[in-house]
Length: 354
Image 1 (cartoon, rainbow, N blue to C red):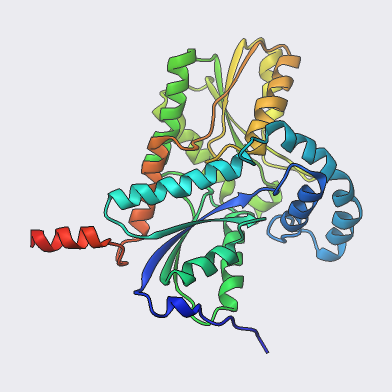
Image 2 (cartoon, rainbow, N blue to C red):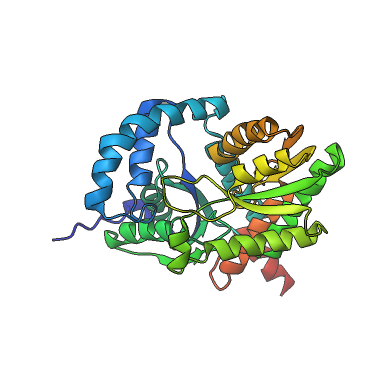
């Protein structure tokens, strides 16, 4: 017999509220092998992430990968860890707090919570928190600009798993993608322009996105196409000509063929070709994290310089850029349409205006 959680006692006496759940990928609790092992076990154990039959994958994951990879990954996390914790967590928390403020300034009284698909705070715990606050409507915002079954759909799975055991399931909506949103593209371009105003323009700009196996795209995943559309729109807003920029994919794992060209190969090719300066921006990440700060800013820079390149600039992610937070608030506001979100002050002002 299935288990259904009881409803929060104090939620039943509250007026119905609307909630927003921001979801990012996740991070270990600490830059230690033990913490990284726990995180990787959950991440790499998700069948959305690794589409290999469990009978084949689980012995490899637990017998080899989780015995060797955590120590190496922990060293990489140590290189980018901050006094406040994981950069991904630090920036994601700021985004949740600032989004609440941006929406409040527009008259929306909503509860905003942050969840991580892997690690803490979990999707289930934050949905419980929203229900405890009386939220009967929840907008789930995946902080992945480009949709993929490996990321976006996995968040939907986590929400569905939680709902399967909820007694009173709230109304649910999802923001699955915003790869071509005008505000998002404008925010990306604004960050690039600000860097160029301070440091000058490079000879070449590389737009690096997280990669997925080619098989994923062949089976119908739209991720690669949406990355290409984001890159095209950003290049247009930056007025870049062909030959001045390159789209590339990073973070390949395993022996399968992944989307190409690979970021490291592109950087090495540019270095060998005598490119003096290259800038790298990562439009698929809204918060700086291991994949941007270590893989690109450290490893990517080393690869470019070793191949003969001279000057390497990593351009930070959107993080807490005001244009990005305004764009995110716009996206959320559009998806909240029709749901009651107006705070008491806004309701009072509306009553006076009538």
